[in-house]
Image: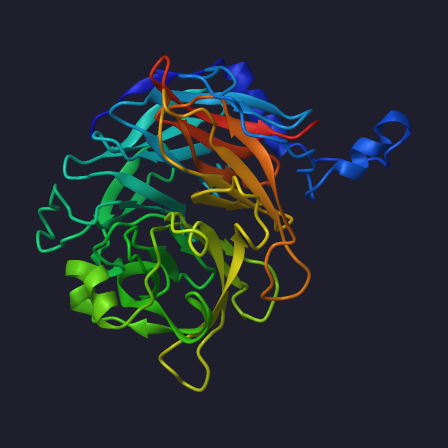
Length: 447
């Protein structure tokens, strides 16, 4: 294992960040006098009420390194870590969501040519490498498991650096990182999990029963559900792919999870999904799982999927999957797929290529876009949007508004992730120009 250390801010500054995220917020006072109209214009719920931004930033190469985003009035942003944009390219974020140090550490992986798992201690301000393997490539998804490990994966449709234990795998693999219980910035071991499929992994979510949801970032790409043979043990289990059975629109409608051959998915999960007749989408990228109360006994009701491919109007959208458990001993859990956000349905015309997703505590879905391009041809900063739930079940979002926008023409927002208490939004400015340092940023609402 190799270690690098970066000093990113003073301990006092980052202690203030932890305090800001940990603070118990008071209810918002009723609007009075000159603030009355502003309060009427605020959207969102919970701690994140804001006046939407009217337009994207007019970006510049490199943007503002100290404030990479334009955020709503009253909001603040703080850079919590800086890492080299080349070759690392920091991507997705998670915290240690459980355990004695819960919330103290921010973990992220890099999808560049030197893929690593790094961590920032939000109390001390120190960033270090947790794990590195020379056969890793383009690490993208990251998620904290209910049993206290970290699951990360390779975004590789065709693996160029083969895992020596699993050379038969055509695509990328998932890896489970077991952290030291006394020092969560150190990995005791890293174990490959080929049962989750060899494919171009991106967004990953885990429900309360230990089922793992994932995608293959291809066109066509597929949506997967892994059911372990034993909860908390990802060494064996059944991988399924989503298939629309009764369409109501473009790849929406009644659906089922079809089982894939266990041996075949460890070689090429995408090919296994094609053979099973699974429904393909144009570059699914990220997932977010609603864990509110509802019909499912494990509390996982809706799976949101960002479809990043540009094939207007039916792609360039976020779909929602109403999850249901197997009935009567059936092997196939069923589901219902519907459009949640799409241009022409409920999103503005400049909403394009949704890429990363994060759910607030109040159920609003935050969406980071990645339309591609860089300076000098690019003039608009990439945006982060917020979709407010509609009333009723299986309905599109009621509104889609702009929350934040990047000032850097070269960068894209990645890894949006709400602090475990729900009061701060972490997001990375990836592929930054200017000083060549990607930034991990924490956006906070008014105090």
